[in-house]
Image (cartoon, rainbow, N blue to C red; front, side, top):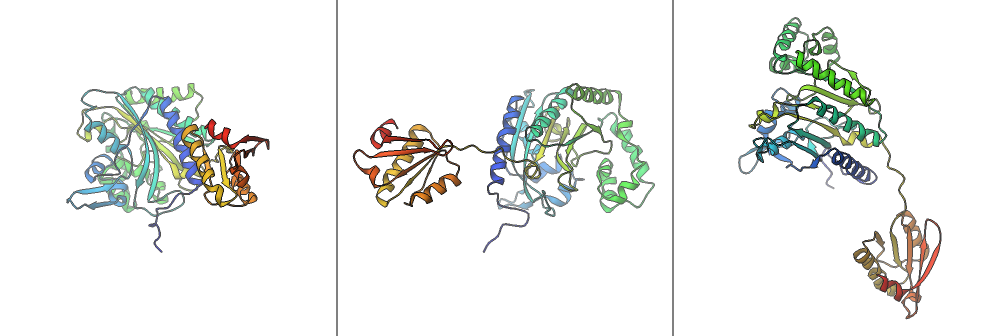
Length: 409
């Protein structure tokens, strides 16, 4: 027997039904905010993620599904969604036209990491990306939209906020941070590497010893320039205007190198130690990093697998028809009625091809949550035969001739 690869799993109902329900309703909310759907390839050039996600990130260093294809191209399976959307934006020359665009996307991402609860090697994200809006109220809009999505599914999450500064205030802060980090040699191996490549990433370390050592580290939020501080204040006040609760987390830096200014995460205490269920922020230099004209950008991504266990599907109502034959001779008419209902009435129809007894059909119809139940036997095949249509919700019955029923279709 051939099994699915480690960290990659099949999705059956009810999980698959939850997934579709989640995508459908997040898409509706995103469209209400003026976002349109975009689809990008799963396979991209490796350079795309090295330039965007950053050489210092764990994703690039440890987790990418990277290989040389038959055309001798260095490619990888996308580990996240933002870089591909930015690449598409630049390739379509939307940056040169100065266009403002809002996109949403969903699909599979791939990271070679240790599988655990809510964290797989093939996982799914829903995300949004907004281009061309420099106003910090766009950041607030993105956060409010994400909050609305989670509230729709009844998911409680705490919002963590931080500002990562800009090219004006970041360099001097990095100098202060590096001087602080140089005072200790006890940082973990990853942090020693990050200290040389992107020191701010050290603040994101989950190692308990590193967290203790970093307790008195200088904080970026205390070193913001006037412009960044003013924008961060506007962001907070806008969220307060809409009664959205949040807390400032000065150690929040996000796991990707392309973020600047606003950074945020939504966290839940109901999924174990890996508490982040969604996050994002502003990336005003990423379009330029990928060869485009300088363009403002902000977005977020939701880890779908983590959320599926945090909500239940609404109780489904009975719908459509169940049609079954009681005899072999009635199978053809059963199938004919089912197909005419589907084609001519656009109805939801469940049709059992093989004949069964009445109780078996009724049991199947009930199990499949059908609203109307029609069984066809030899009596129904007669010239003046009648169909009994039973409403499984109200238990009402209706009798019509087969001829008139077919004519109505």
